[in-house]
Image (cartoon, rainbow, N blue to C red; front, side):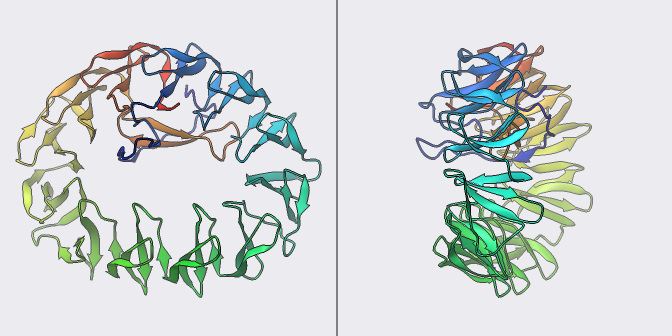
Amino acid sequence: MNIFDDANLNQKTVKMKVKSLLVALAIAFSGFVSAQPIAAIAKKGNKVGFIDKSGNWLIEAKFDIVQTFKGDYALAKVNEKWGTIDKKGTWVIPAKFERLSVPEDGYAMAMLGGLWVIVNDKGETVYKNTEYKKIAKLGNGMLVGYMKKTADYIDVSTGEKVATPIESKSLNQFSDGLARFKEKKWGYIDKAGSYKIKSQFDDAKDFKDGKAMVKSAGKWGQIDLNGAWIIPAEFDKIQGFRKGQAIAKQNGKTGIINEKGNWIVKPQYEKLRLFNSGMAFATKGGVKGYVNEAGEFKPGPASATAIYPFSDGYAMIKVVDKIGYMNTKLEIVIEPKYTKALDWGGVFGRVMIGESWSLVNEAGEEFKISNVQKFYKFHGDLMAFKSNNKYGYIDKTGEVIIKPIYTSVEDEYLYNVTSKGGFGMLTKTVYQAPNRDANGFILMNRGGKYGAVDKTGKEVIPFQFDDIKAFFPF
């Protein structure tokens, strides 16, 4: 049973790399600054609570379901009712609601006796819906109420309706103090219902961190909260920014722009990915190759049947039906001789030899472990692997540091749990990476019980829990 969510949402694996850059960095899953207190949700019997990194209870296991803390409070459920608790486990919002969202801006949506209400951060009802067929989209203290053919904004601090420029049957959630609104064109209104940014755009997205993507005269750009252009509307398409860069399309060709809308890679490609290891996988004139950071396009080797994106300094290359690896100079460093391979993971390529997965380093040396079903990528100094349905770890020399005796590790199903947008329901993102804090311990299952070992395999949390999920800043 998933202790986070009684709806048993499906699990999917996606990739993510984590870097600790600042002393106070709070990241999405389990990498922390060691000086900051951390906690994990743990299960004992049929109840859950919170433990510290030694396995001691911070908050006793007395809840049916809990969520990770957001600030000083966390959602918790007992006897089919939701409330919020503080870091001592004391109820702040009493557990009396059938459903409850995480309080934001001092308010939360809740269901009480089958009716949706708005409560403050003490659980006191400040708005009770007696008029609308449905209420939703609480944001910045503004709520949307739906009738059969119309919708209204409600200021939950007063319970009063807020008039909009024209009547509408579909309203958008407030974000950064503004909401998208459409007459003939899209604009943005403030919490008084007046235009802050006039109706002028063909399309518009919600504001986030003071920025919003908008479409004008058929082209996309980005504006600030005053409607001033950050990125001029010159692009057919702009994908989401990552590390200050985004894929953009102009006149049918693709390139890469920075956060000011300047070209880093000029638009001359049919297909293009963001940089990895200083190389961006691209297709130009039907030819696959790579763009370096100087903007130069380099086609793949003439001998290649297929080439693949770079990862950790190397890219797979296929010649006829065999796979090897090449470096960023497009020199083949591992001869194509493997029938199956995965992208480079840290200091090793992951290749199939016979019926078992093995590793190969940049010198071409092979490291074999019996009956390996899967290798993961390195996180820090260790790489997890699965052998005979058990999990272990190797280091960067290929030596087995933690023997494969564990029935599960958080490499395969690592949860980053967020509760935004849910009403007593969790949104889960799953990453492929070990569940380790800055001290290097790993959550594992042994003999049906959960605990943790350090990077040498030494037990640091006793294997006595029925479940433990990823540590988070507490």
